[in-house]
Length: 125
Image (tube, rainbow, N blue to C red; front, side, top):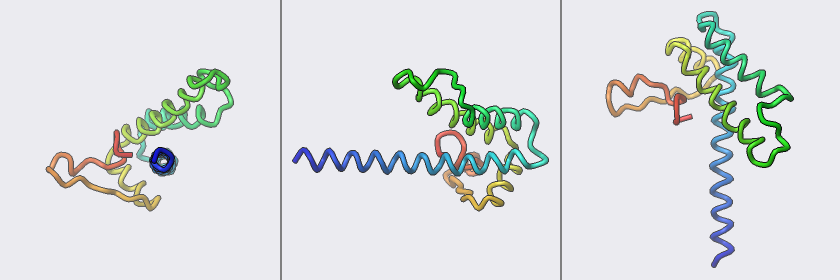
């Protein structure tokens, strides 16, 4: 039947969005901890601060009243800024902040090089 499949897709999409939003919340908590850490480089703090100010600011790059594009800048720039902030921080600081925040520190154990990368970097978050 068409109706149940339609609602199944809506439910699946809703779960994916909720999962993505949860990961962004985790990344936000990590960014706040990273910005308070004394060993965080100034440029990572600058990117994180700019991202948080942009997210909380009522002024947008593209006004929200413009359909689709207005909200698209928020959906792209804020997660990109959070990712970039975490990526600019040394791995030792990132790991320490993740442990303090109680966030999982998953490892990819397929090979030695990728086993050293944190899961919340690029696409995995």
